[in-house]
Length: 464
Image (cartoon, rainbow, N blue to C red):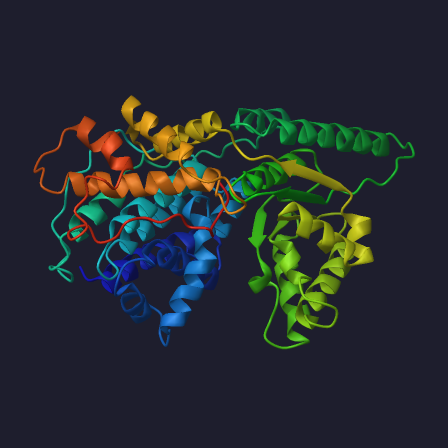
Protein backbone atom coordinates (compact mmCIF):
# COMPACT_ATOMS: atom_id res chain seq x y z
CA UNK A 1 0.00 0.00 0.00
CA UNK A 2 1.30 3.49 -0.86
CA UNK A 3 2.39 5.76 1.93
CA UNK A 4 -0.60 8.07 1.80
CA UNK A 5 -2.94 5.07 1.48
CA UNK A 6 -1.56 3.48 4.63
CA UNK A 7 -1.87 6.72 6.56
CA UNK A 8 -5.42 7.31 5.30
CA UNK A 9 -6.44 3.85 6.48
CA UNK A 10 -4.83 4.36 9.90
CA UNK A 11 -6.57 7.72 10.25
CA UNK A 12 -9.92 6.18 9.37
CA UNK A 13 -9.48 3.57 12.10
CA UNK A 14 -8.38 6.22 14.61
CA UNK A 15 -11.33 8.49 13.86
CA UNK A 16 -13.73 5.60 14.32
CA UNK A 17 -12.37 5.06 17.84
CA UNK A 18 -12.31 8.81 18.46
CA UNK A 19 -16.03 8.98 17.63
CA UNK A 20 -16.81 6.30 20.20
CA UNK A 21 -14.55 7.94 22.79
CA UNK A 22 -15.98 11.42 22.35
CA UNK A 23 -12.76 12.93 20.99
CA UNK A 24 -13.37 15.73 18.49
CA UNK A 25 -12.56 14.56 14.97
CA UNK A 26 -10.48 17.63 14.10
CA UNK A 27 -8.36 17.18 17.21
CA UNK A 28 -7.81 13.46 16.69
CA UNK A 29 -6.86 14.02 13.05
CA UNK A 30 -4.53 16.92 13.83
CA UNK A 31 -2.65 15.05 16.56
CA UNK A 32 -2.36 11.89 14.47
CA UNK A 33 -1.05 13.76 11.45
CA UNK A 34 1.44 15.62 13.63
CA UNK A 35 2.62 12.35 15.15
CA UNK A 36 3.04 10.77 11.71
CA UNK A 37 5.01 13.80 10.49
CA UNK A 38 7.27 13.75 13.55
CA UNK A 39 8.07 10.08 12.99
CA UNK A 40 8.64 10.31 9.23
CA UNK A 41 10.34 13.70 8.95
CA UNK A 42 13.72 12.14 8.08
CA UNK A 43 12.28 10.06 5.21
CA UNK A 44 12.90 11.47 1.72
CA UNK A 45 9.59 12.09 -0.01
CA UNK A 46 7.56 11.91 3.22
CA UNK A 47 6.26 15.51 2.98
CA UNK A 48 4.74 14.76 -0.44
CA UNK A 49 3.03 11.56 0.72
CA UNK A 50 1.82 13.27 3.90
CA UNK A 51 0.53 16.22 1.87
CA UNK A 52 -1.68 13.93 -0.20
CA UNK A 53 -3.60 13.09 2.98
CA UNK A 54 -3.85 16.74 4.11
CA UNK A 55 -5.62 18.67 1.40
CA UNK A 56 -3.75 21.81 0.41
CA UNK A 57 -0.82 21.13 2.74
CA UNK A 58 2.64 22.38 1.86
CA UNK A 59 6.07 21.05 2.75
CA UNK A 60 6.29 23.72 5.43
CA UNK A 61 3.00 22.48 6.89
CA UNK A 62 4.55 19.01 7.14
CA UNK A 63 7.57 20.23 9.10
CA UNK A 64 5.46 22.51 11.29
CA UNK A 65 3.32 19.48 12.16
CA UNK A 66 6.47 17.46 12.85
CA UNK A 67 7.63 20.04 15.40
CA UNK A 68 4.27 19.84 17.18
CA UNK A 69 4.29 16.04 17.10
CA UNK A 70 7.79 15.40 18.43
CA UNK A 71 6.56 15.55 22.03
CA UNK A 72 4.48 12.42 21.35
CA UNK A 73 7.38 10.30 20.16
CA UNK A 74 7.85 9.23 23.77
CA UNK A 75 4.58 10.19 25.46
CA UNK A 76 0.83 9.82 24.90
CA UNK A 77 -0.92 12.36 22.68
CA UNK A 78 -3.08 15.01 24.29
CA UNK A 79 -6.35 13.27 23.43
CA UNK A 80 -5.08 9.92 24.72
CA UNK A 81 -3.90 11.61 27.93
CA UNK A 82 -7.43 12.90 28.51
CA UNK A 83 -8.98 9.49 27.85
CA UNK A 84 -6.57 7.97 30.37
CA UNK A 85 -7.34 10.69 32.94
CA UNK A 86 -11.08 10.11 32.44
CA UNK A 87 -10.70 6.31 32.73
CA UNK A 88 -12.33 5.90 29.31
CA UNK A 89 -13.12 2.36 28.20
CA UNK A 90 -11.78 3.37 24.76
CA UNK A 91 -8.30 4.37 25.93
CA UNK A 92 -6.66 1.09 24.91
CA UNK A 93 -8.41 1.03 21.54
CA UNK A 94 -7.33 4.63 20.95
CA UNK A 95 -3.73 3.80 21.86
CA UNK A 96 -3.81 0.84 19.49
CA UNK A 97 -5.10 3.09 16.72
CA UNK A 98 -2.25 5.55 17.40
CA UNK A 99 0.19 2.64 17.18
CA UNK A 100 -1.36 1.99 13.75
CA UNK A 101 -0.63 5.59 12.79
CA UNK A 102 2.99 5.10 13.89
CA UNK A 103 3.22 2.01 11.71
CA UNK A 104 1.71 3.88 8.76
CA UNK A 105 4.35 6.60 9.15
CA UNK A 106 6.90 3.99 8.07
CA UNK A 107 5.33 3.93 4.59
CA UNK A 108 5.68 7.67 3.96
CA UNK A 109 8.32 8.44 1.37
CA UNK A 110 11.44 6.26 1.38
CA UNK A 111 11.62 4.88 4.96
CA UNK A 112 14.87 5.33 6.83
CA UNK A 113 16.27 3.49 9.81
CA UNK A 114 15.49 6.53 11.92
CA UNK A 115 11.80 6.17 11.10
CA UNK A 116 11.92 2.53 12.23
CA UNK A 117 13.16 3.46 15.69
CA UNK A 118 10.93 6.51 16.02
CA UNK A 119 7.81 4.52 15.16
CA UNK A 120 8.65 1.55 17.39
CA UNK A 121 9.28 3.69 20.47
CA UNK A 122 6.31 5.99 19.81
CA UNK A 123 3.90 3.06 19.39
CA UNK A 124 5.15 1.54 22.64
CA UNK A 125 4.73 4.88 24.44
CA UNK A 126 1.08 5.18 23.43
CA UNK A 127 0.31 1.57 24.37
CA UNK A 128 2.14 1.69 27.69
CA UNK A 129 0.42 4.89 28.75
CA UNK A 130 -2.99 3.30 28.16
CA UNK A 131 -2.07 0.08 29.93
CA UNK A 132 -1.93 -2.04 26.77
CA UNK A 133 0.89 -4.57 26.97
CA UNK A 134 2.71 -5.68 23.82
CA UNK A 135 2.39 -9.42 23.26
CA UNK A 136 5.62 -11.40 23.48
CA UNK A 137 5.42 -12.41 19.84
CA UNK A 138 7.94 -12.07 17.08
CA UNK A 139 7.61 -9.77 14.10
CA UNK A 140 8.46 -11.13 10.69
CA UNK A 141 9.93 -9.06 7.89
CA UNK A 142 7.28 -7.92 5.47
CA UNK A 143 7.49 -7.36 1.75
CA UNK A 144 8.08 -3.78 0.68
CA UNK A 145 4.82 -1.84 0.30
CA UNK A 146 3.62 -1.88 -3.28
CA UNK A 147 3.77 1.90 -3.45
CA UNK A 148 7.50 1.92 -2.67
CA UNK A 149 8.99 -1.23 -4.27
CA UNK A 150 12.35 0.45 -4.71
CA UNK A 151 12.88 0.99 -1.02
CA UNK A 152 14.81 -1.94 0.49
CA UNK A 153 14.05 -0.75 4.00
CA UNK A 154 10.33 -0.15 3.53
CA UNK A 155 9.05 -3.61 4.37
CA UNK A 156 11.38 -4.13 7.32
CA UNK A 157 10.58 -0.66 8.63
CA UNK A 158 6.84 -1.18 8.58
CA UNK A 159 7.17 -4.64 10.13
CA UNK A 160 9.38 -3.34 12.92
CA UNK A 161 6.79 -0.75 13.86
CA UNK A 162 3.87 -3.20 14.00
CA UNK A 163 2.88 -3.85 17.61
CA UNK A 164 0.42 -6.58 18.64
CA UNK A 165 -1.49 -5.92 21.81
CA UNK A 166 -3.59 -7.78 24.29
CA UNK A 167 -7.35 -7.45 23.68
CA UNK A 168 -8.69 -4.33 25.32
CA UNK A 169 -10.13 -4.79 28.77
CA UNK A 170 -13.46 -3.01 28.80
CA UNK A 171 -13.92 -3.05 32.58
CA UNK A 172 -13.61 0.43 34.02
CA UNK A 173 -10.51 0.78 36.14
CA UNK A 174 -10.82 2.51 39.52
CA UNK A 175 -9.02 5.87 39.62
CA UNK A 176 -5.54 5.77 41.08
CA UNK A 177 -5.07 6.92 44.64
CA UNK A 178 -2.58 9.53 45.79
CA UNK A 179 -0.48 6.75 47.32
CA UNK A 180 -0.39 4.81 44.04
CA UNK A 181 0.59 7.88 42.04
CA UNK A 182 3.29 8.84 44.53
CA UNK A 183 4.59 5.27 44.29
CA UNK A 184 4.84 5.71 40.51
CA UNK A 185 6.77 8.91 41.09
CA UNK A 186 9.12 7.16 43.49
CA UNK A 187 9.77 4.42 40.92
CA UNK A 188 11.14 6.91 38.39
CA UNK A 189 14.86 6.76 37.83
CA UNK A 190 16.81 9.44 39.72
CA UNK A 191 15.08 12.77 40.48
CA UNK A 192 15.51 12.42 44.24
CA UNK A 193 15.23 16.15 44.89
CA UNK A 194 12.10 16.35 42.70
CA UNK A 195 10.47 13.46 44.54
CA UNK A 196 11.07 15.07 47.93
CA UNK A 197 9.59 18.39 46.79
CA UNK A 198 6.50 16.78 45.24
CA UNK A 199 5.90 14.75 48.41
CA UNK A 200 6.24 17.95 50.46
CA UNK A 201 3.86 19.83 48.17
CA UNK A 202 1.30 17.02 48.38
CA UNK A 203 1.47 17.00 52.19
CA UNK A 204 0.96 20.77 52.38
CA UNK A 205 -1.97 20.78 49.96
CA UNK A 206 -3.61 17.80 51.65
CA UNK A 207 -3.52 19.48 55.08
CA UNK A 208 -4.78 22.76 53.60
CA UNK A 209 -7.75 20.91 52.08
CA UNK A 210 -8.52 19.11 55.35
CA UNK A 211 -8.35 22.37 57.32
CA UNK A 212 -10.74 24.03 54.89
CA UNK A 213 -13.16 21.11 55.13
CA UNK A 214 -13.00 21.36 58.94
CA UNK A 215 -13.94 25.03 58.82
CA UNK A 216 -10.50 26.21 59.94
CA UNK A 217 -8.68 29.20 58.53
CA UNK A 218 -6.04 28.21 56.04
CA UNK A 219 -3.67 30.34 53.98
CA UNK A 220 -4.23 30.13 50.24
CA UNK A 221 -1.32 28.13 48.86
CA UNK A 222 -0.63 28.48 45.17
CA UNK A 223 -0.66 25.16 43.35
CA UNK A 224 1.12 26.42 40.25
CA UNK A 225 4.70 25.23 39.76
CA UNK A 226 7.92 26.15 38.01
CA UNK A 227 10.04 23.25 36.71
CA UNK A 228 13.63 24.15 35.88
CA UNK A 229 16.24 21.89 34.35
CA UNK A 230 17.99 20.85 31.18
CA UNK A 231 16.21 19.00 28.34
CA UNK A 232 15.15 15.41 28.91
CA UNK A 233 15.24 15.50 32.71
CA UNK A 234 11.70 14.19 33.15
CA UNK A 235 9.75 17.43 33.56
CA UNK A 236 6.81 16.35 31.40
CA UNK A 237 6.66 12.92 33.01
CA UNK A 238 6.48 14.44 36.48
CA UNK A 239 3.92 17.02 35.34
CA UNK A 240 1.69 14.19 34.14
CA UNK A 241 1.94 12.50 37.54
CA UNK A 242 1.28 15.78 39.35
CA UNK A 243 -1.92 16.24 37.35
CA UNK A 244 -3.11 12.82 38.49
CA UNK A 245 -2.09 13.47 42.10
CA UNK A 246 -3.95 16.78 42.22
CA UNK A 247 -7.05 15.09 40.84
CA UNK A 248 -6.78 12.31 43.44
CA UNK A 249 -6.51 14.99 46.14
CA UNK A 250 -9.75 16.50 44.89
CA UNK A 251 -8.04 19.71 43.78
CA UNK A 252 -8.78 19.17 40.07
CA UNK A 253 -11.93 17.79 38.46
CA UNK A 254 -10.37 15.93 35.50
CA UNK A 255 -6.60 15.68 35.87
CA UNK A 256 -5.58 15.78 32.21
CA UNK A 257 -2.26 17.26 31.08
CA UNK A 258 -2.27 19.73 28.18
CA UNK A 259 1.25 20.40 26.93
CA UNK A 260 1.94 23.48 24.79
CA UNK A 261 4.71 25.83 23.75
CA UNK A 262 4.80 29.39 22.44
CA UNK A 263 3.55 28.47 18.96
CA UNK A 264 0.31 27.14 20.41
CA UNK A 265 -0.38 30.27 22.46
CA UNK A 266 0.68 33.06 20.11
CA UNK A 267 -1.26 33.95 16.94
CA UNK A 268 -0.13 35.93 13.91
CA UNK A 269 -1.84 39.17 14.86
CA UNK A 270 -2.38 41.18 18.02
CA UNK A 271 -5.81 40.51 19.43
CA UNK A 272 -5.88 36.97 18.07
CA UNK A 273 -3.30 35.83 20.61
CA UNK A 274 -5.62 36.53 23.54
CA UNK A 275 -8.33 34.38 21.98
CA UNK A 276 -5.91 31.60 21.11
CA UNK A 277 -4.38 31.53 24.60
CA UNK A 278 -7.81 31.58 26.25
CA UNK A 279 -8.90 28.60 24.13
CA UNK A 280 -5.81 26.62 25.13
CA UNK A 281 -6.38 27.38 28.80
CA UNK A 282 -10.03 26.36 28.47
CA UNK A 283 -8.93 22.98 27.08
CA UNK A 284 -6.80 22.48 30.20
CA UNK A 285 -9.55 23.45 32.65
CA UNK A 286 -9.92 20.74 35.27
CA UNK A 287 -6.32 19.67 34.74
CA UNK A 288 -2.75 20.90 34.26
CA UNK A 289 -1.53 23.26 31.56
CA UNK A 290 2.17 22.55 30.95
CA UNK A 291 4.03 25.31 29.07
CA UNK A 292 7.46 24.21 27.89
CA UNK A 293 10.16 26.84 27.29
CA UNK A 294 7.77 29.40 28.78
CA UNK A 295 10.47 32.09 28.74
CA UNK A 296 10.06 32.30 24.95
CA UNK A 297 6.91 34.35 25.66
CA UNK A 298 8.94 37.16 27.24
CA UNK A 299 12.36 36.63 25.67
CA UNK A 300 12.40 39.89 23.64
CA UNK A 301 13.60 43.25 24.88
CA UNK A 302 11.03 45.77 26.09
CA UNK A 303 8.50 46.33 23.30
CA UNK A 304 10.04 43.65 21.09
CA UNK A 305 7.44 40.96 21.60
CA UNK A 306 3.94 42.29 22.05
CA UNK A 307 2.49 38.92 21.09
CA UNK A 308 4.21 37.07 23.89
CA UNK A 309 3.25 39.71 26.43
CA UNK A 310 -0.36 39.50 25.25
CA UNK A 311 -0.26 35.72 25.81
CA UNK A 312 1.18 36.18 29.32
CA UNK A 313 -1.41 38.82 30.25
CA UNK A 314 -4.20 36.52 29.06
CA UNK A 315 -2.67 33.58 30.90
CA UNK A 316 -2.55 35.52 34.18
CA UNK A 317 -6.21 36.54 33.81
CA UNK A 318 -7.30 32.99 32.99
CA UNK A 319 -5.34 31.61 35.94
CA UNK A 320 -7.25 33.95 38.23
CA UNK A 321 -10.64 33.22 36.65
CA UNK A 322 -10.06 29.45 36.83
CA UNK A 323 -8.05 29.37 40.05
CA UNK A 324 -10.26 26.68 41.61
CA UNK A 325 -9.88 24.12 38.82
CA UNK A 326 -6.65 24.77 36.91
CA UNK A 327 -2.97 24.29 37.60
CA UNK A 328 -0.27 25.77 35.39
CA UNK A 329 3.26 24.39 35.27
CA UNK A 330 5.89 26.38 33.37
CA UNK A 331 9.20 24.79 32.46
CA UNK A 332 12.57 25.59 30.97
CA UNK A 333 16.23 26.35 31.67
CA UNK A 334 16.86 27.79 35.17
CA UNK A 335 18.20 31.29 34.36
CA UNK A 336 15.69 32.20 31.60
CA UNK A 337 12.82 30.98 33.80
CA UNK A 338 13.84 33.40 36.58
CA UNK A 339 13.66 36.23 34.05
CA UNK A 340 10.29 34.97 32.81
CA UNK A 341 8.70 34.92 36.25
CA UNK A 342 10.04 38.39 37.03
CA UNK A 343 8.67 39.81 33.78
CA UNK A 344 5.10 40.07 35.03
CA UNK A 345 3.92 40.79 38.61
CA UNK A 346 0.99 38.43 38.08
CA UNK A 347 3.37 35.58 37.36
CA UNK A 348 5.58 36.29 40.36
CA UNK A 349 2.61 36.19 42.72
CA UNK A 350 1.29 32.91 41.34
CA UNK A 351 4.47 30.88 40.80
CA UNK A 352 6.09 30.58 44.22
CA UNK A 353 7.27 26.98 44.12
CA UNK A 354 10.22 26.04 41.93
CA UNK A 355 11.34 22.44 41.51
CA UNK A 356 14.80 21.81 40.07
CA UNK A 357 15.46 18.76 37.89
CA UNK A 358 19.05 17.54 38.00
CA UNK A 359 20.87 15.93 35.09
CA UNK A 360 20.99 12.13 35.11
CA UNK A 361 24.12 10.16 35.98
CA UNK A 362 25.51 7.45 33.69
CA UNK A 363 23.94 4.74 35.84
CA UNK A 364 20.57 6.48 35.73
CA UNK A 365 20.74 6.94 31.96
CA UNK A 366 21.56 3.25 31.58
CA UNK A 367 18.52 2.39 33.69
CA UNK A 368 16.38 4.69 31.53
CA UNK A 369 17.63 3.06 28.34
CA UNK A 370 16.89 -0.39 29.75
CA UNK A 371 13.38 0.65 30.78
CA UNK A 372 12.63 2.16 27.38
CA UNK A 373 13.83 -0.95 25.57
CA UNK A 374 11.75 -3.24 27.78
CA UNK A 375 8.73 -1.03 27.19
CA UNK A 376 9.17 -1.46 23.44
CA UNK A 377 9.67 -5.24 23.90
CA UNK A 378 13.39 -5.26 23.14
CA UNK A 379 16.25 -6.63 25.23
CA UNK A 380 19.66 -5.00 25.50
CA UNK A 381 22.33 -7.68 25.85
CA UNK A 382 25.11 -6.94 28.41
CA UNK A 383 27.58 -6.01 25.68
CA UNK A 384 25.10 -3.44 24.36
CA UNK A 385 24.84 -1.83 27.77
CA UNK A 386 28.64 -1.69 27.96
CA UNK A 387 28.70 -0.04 24.55
CA UNK A 388 26.12 2.53 25.72
CA UNK A 389 28.34 3.41 28.69
CA UNK A 390 31.23 3.95 26.27
CA UNK A 391 29.03 6.25 24.19
CA UNK A 392 28.10 8.21 27.32
CA UNK A 393 31.74 8.56 28.31
CA UNK A 394 32.52 10.12 24.95
CA UNK A 395 29.53 12.46 24.83
CA UNK A 396 29.96 16.10 26.00
CA UNK A 397 27.57 17.06 28.81
CA UNK A 398 26.94 20.65 27.84
CA UNK A 399 23.66 22.53 28.00
CA UNK A 400 22.36 20.86 24.84
CA UNK A 401 22.81 17.30 26.15
CA UNK A 402 19.44 15.54 26.01
CA UNK A 403 19.60 13.44 29.21
CA UNK A 404 16.74 10.93 29.04
CA UNK A 405 15.95 12.08 25.53
CA UNK A 406 19.52 11.15 24.57
CA UNK A 407 18.88 7.61 25.81
CA UNK A 408 15.65 7.44 23.82
CA UNK A 409 17.41 8.65 20.66
CA UNK A 410 20.09 6.01 21.11
CA UNK A 411 17.43 3.32 21.41
CA UNK A 412 15.57 4.58 18.34
CA UNK A 413 18.80 4.45 16.35
CA UNK A 414 19.59 0.97 17.65
CA UNK A 415 16.14 -0.32 16.68
CA UNK A 416 16.71 0.98 13.17
CA UNK A 417 20.11 -0.69 12.89
CA UNK A 418 18.66 -3.88 14.39
CA UNK A 419 16.00 -3.96 11.65
CA UNK A 420 18.64 -3.37 8.98
CA UNK A 421 20.85 -6.11 10.42
CA UNK A 422 17.97 -8.59 10.07
CA UNK A 423 16.95 -7.46 6.59
CA UNK A 424 18.22 -10.66 4.92
CA UNK A 425 17.17 -13.09 7.67
CA UNK A 426 14.15 -14.93 6.29
CA UNK A 427 12.88 -16.45 9.55
CA UNK A 428 14.50 -14.73 12.53
CA UNK A 429 14.06 -16.32 15.95
CA UNK A 430 12.20 -14.57 18.75
CA UNK A 431 15.53 -13.79 20.45
CA UNK A 432 16.90 -12.30 17.24
CA UNK A 433 13.82 -10.11 16.94
CA UNK A 434 14.11 -8.87 20.53
CA UNK A 435 17.82 -8.60 21.24
CA UNK A 436 19.72 -5.36 20.67
CA UNK A 437 23.42 -6.14 20.22
CA UNK A 438 26.41 -3.91 20.84
CA UNK A 439 26.86 -3.45 17.10
CA UNK A 440 23.35 -1.98 16.92
CA UNK A 441 24.53 0.94 19.06
CA UNK A 442 27.45 1.71 16.78
CA UNK A 443 27.88 3.10 13.27
CA UNK A 444 31.19 1.35 12.73
CA UNK A 445 29.90 -1.79 11.02
CA UNK A 446 27.38 -0.04 8.78
CA UNK A 447 27.68 0.44 5.05
CA UNK A 448 26.70 4.07 4.54
CA UNK A 449 25.89 3.43 0.87
CA UNK A 450 23.10 1.02 1.87
CA UNK A 451 21.71 2.38 5.11
CA UNK A 452 19.44 5.32 4.27
CA UNK A 453 20.35 7.51 7.23
CA UNK A 454 22.13 7.52 10.52
CA UNK A 455 20.47 8.96 13.56
CA UNK A 456 21.68 12.25 14.96
CA UNK A 457 20.70 13.46 18.39
CA UNK A 458 17.45 15.42 18.18
CA UNK A 459 17.65 18.49 20.38
CA UNK A 460 13.91 19.00 20.24
CA UNK A 461 10.94 16.89 21.18
CA UNK A 462 9.30 15.59 24.27
CA UNK A 463 10.75 14.97 27.69
CA UNK A 464 11.92 11.54 28.75
